[in-house]
Image: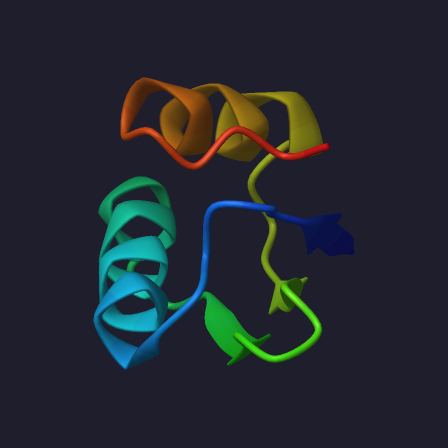
Length: 62
């Protein structure tokens, strides 16, 4: 699944986004690109759950 996160602008944001996603699914594979603000996630967790925890952390997907 893919998310577009406007507020993800640097490497620190990428680390935070990855940590938040892996707090729900520790085995999730996360590939994030701050230049395009896109995050590709391979996870068994529901998309809605990941979107909710990202929003709670200040990285609401667009």
